[in-house]
Amino acid sequence: MAASPAANVPTAAPTVQPTVAAAVACGDDVEFVSDLTVPDFSKVAPGTALNKQWQVRNSGTCAWGPQHRVIFVDGNNLGATVEHALYPALPGTLAVVNVSMVAPAAAGDYEGYWRLSDAKGEPFGSRLYIKITVAAPQP
Image (cartoon, rainbow, N blue to C red; front, side, top):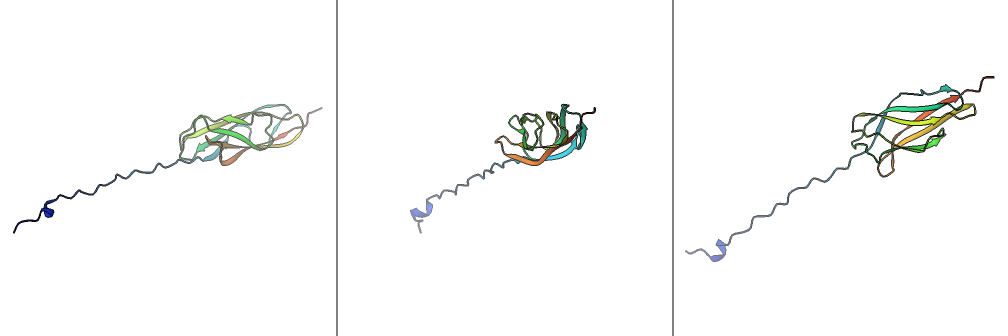
């Protein structure tokens, strides 16, 4: 018995599409480690120049690059520019956030709050803050 012509027609193997892993977006986050300068409730003289430094950890999965910033969000900015570039930091590493300020001329308690922001300007992580007491001038 002869084979029918249809029986000898080769069939194409199914085409398998390679699986492409979806790009996983990284996430920004920050963890406060310590106040390096100007501890909370520091007493300072009116007009004193302050160089506030916070040590933080990049606790996210994104590297901080040139577009990452520290921005003023609330309270008294103590004469500081309201936006500063961050130093680059890889995930898991420590970094120093540095803001130059000046104590007000009037005696009293002052607080200023800052946050980090991503390349799109979106804030992330907990607020960083400074709390000082400006002492009354001595007669």
